[in-house]
Image (tube, rainbow, N blue to C red; front, side, top):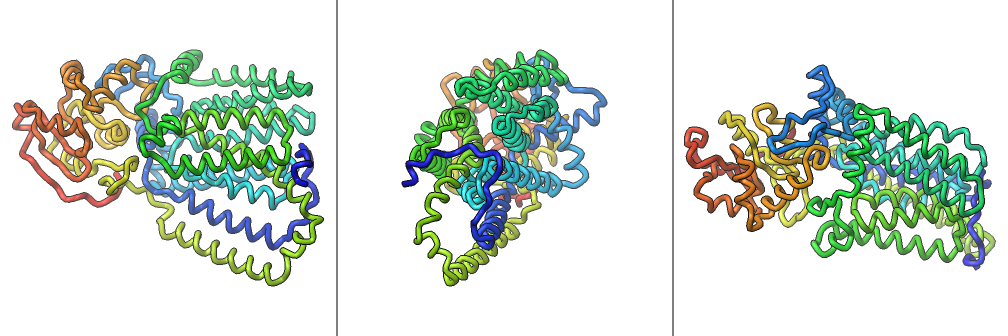
Length: 523
């Protein structure tokens, strides 16, 4: 029985007896499917924050240590853990536009898949098992690759770190672990997710110690990698920021809520159920084949825990399953190879049917990818009907602001803040935006979200931090409250956005304008 066969930790991949046509066909189908999942064209709000920082960096001729985009109180210094991402993205966007950023996303996404596959093969999985596991964990492509976030670097460096750690663990040769030092230094300046890499090194040290295997090389590299992260523009202040940021509650940001809370709020239901299904099925399968590798079990268990606690961490569970699960699948397949029913599956007529299905699926996914316009960077101008979490942009309101030369402190939605920084600075400074804990004190964030939710003390926020303009989601509770406030006059509205100016400032309010929905596009 398969349950009586423990999963081995192999160093060299075994000779594969999988039919070559099956492996190649599945590989091509998965490639088409992966590109289709990566083809998301609606720009992520964080993108504009990177570009705004990059513009400030390249045009000012100095490193920006102080925020210039917000009118609310900000932290000093401004520790922007994604600063290097902005420095790289800005010239790419200015020279190649959205297509350049999209191509970068595809390259990094495919490189991540290649690293997962290579690590699984390094652990002893057959090509068939490695590809089957990729089909199972492909959910991370839809979760983590909206165009285009700094997280794409974390998703690349995470399996690269796993590859180096697994190679050292299985071979007993630790010289390649030195590559983690420059990797961590680069990662720390691109995205704060480098903590996941440090955490993996620490868990490998713990797991190997508990397994009574050499662990001191991992422990040494862990401390040296931590020192390497000090190669950044902020020095020790970077870690002071990280200490506060890690423990900061982000209950008002959807990707930081728990899986259970997302379910109760009716958000990301499909993604949540898929995650639970993959975790449960994988856990049952690994238990059935008696998976006994302690170190990978520690990694898997921690990523599942993190994924249940925060939606954005679910990606890490998929990544580690893509690396660890194929070895178990290989062992399972090998047990059944001697069964005559296994051999009969590859009769010529089944091969023909498989090839036909492969061609159909490959054509279908390729068509969907091309039909989506994979190199566009789209800015949806209005909310989709019935969507609770879809991102859209106030393009009509921005045009109105520019056409009427309206300037000043702009109180606006959290998800719009970074876009408005990009298109309206220096004429307007925003309230609070997606840079969140990197820029704003925690108390200011709480006050802001109390206002945006229309809680009883919402007027106190306006009195304490008086804006010149207010731009809100026209469907929100706080927008309805502002409409009833006689001190504010609505001068523009469409399906998704409403713009207000002080009622006393008639010169800045040429009159209410209800506009037709603007066409989707970009700046």
